[in-house]
Length: 271
Image (cartoon, rainbow, N blue to C red; front, top):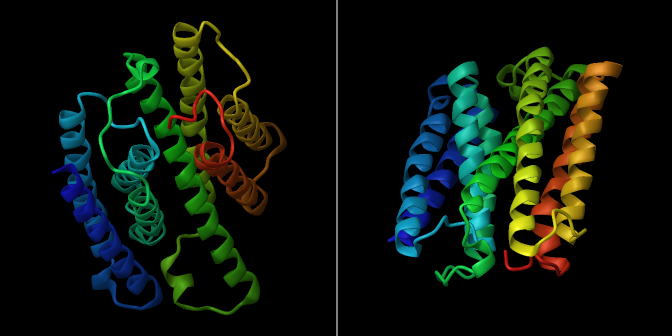
C-alpha cells in the first residue's frame, strides 16, 4: 500500500510542477493556486505513504536510500507549506515541485522492499535525529530555491529585459529576507541533528565522533552554513553573494546526503 501512495504522490508532484511552470511563463492568474494546491495534496498522499510504510515496517521509514530520499522530499514540501501559510508566495511552488518530484523519481530507482532494520538503527534516537536533520536540510533546500529565484530576478532587472518571470517573481528584498529566515531556522536544526547523531553514535559505537565520511562531510556542511550565517550577521552579506553561497552550501549538502552514500563507504553506508 505504501508504494501505491508513493506513486500517487509522485504523479501529483509532477502535475503540480507542470501547472506551476505554466503559471510562471504565462500571464494566467487562475493557474497560480494549482501549484500550492498540488503540493498540499501531494503532501497529504505522501504522508499516507510514509505512515503506511511505518506501520508495515514497524520502525521510522528512513533506513535506506529509497526511504531517505522520499522522506527528504516530504520534509521539503512540508517546510514549503509552512512558508506558504506565512508568506503566500504561489510562485515558490514552481521551484519546490520540481525538486520534490526529482527526489521522488530518484527514490524510485532504489530498492523499495522493506527489510529488517539494522540493530544499530533500532534506537529511539532514530526519529529524533531524523526530524532535526531533515527539517534543517529542508530549510536549506528552500534557501536554495529562493536563491535561484533571486539570481533569475536580478538578472532580469540588470538586463532590463522584462519577461513573464519578472512579473511572477517577488522583489529582490523579499527573496533575500526569505533566504535569511530559512537560514536562521535551518542552521540550529542542522546543529541539533549533528549533536543528536553524535549522542546516538556514542550509544551505538562507543564514540561520539569517528570521522566517518558522513560525519566529516556533515561537519563541512555545518561550517559552510556557519560561514554564511556569520557573513550575514557580522559582515553584512546580502543579495547575490548570499544567494550564491546558499546554492554552494546546498550542493555540498546534497553530496553529504547522497554522494557520500554512493561513493564512500563507512559506518553510515547502510543508508
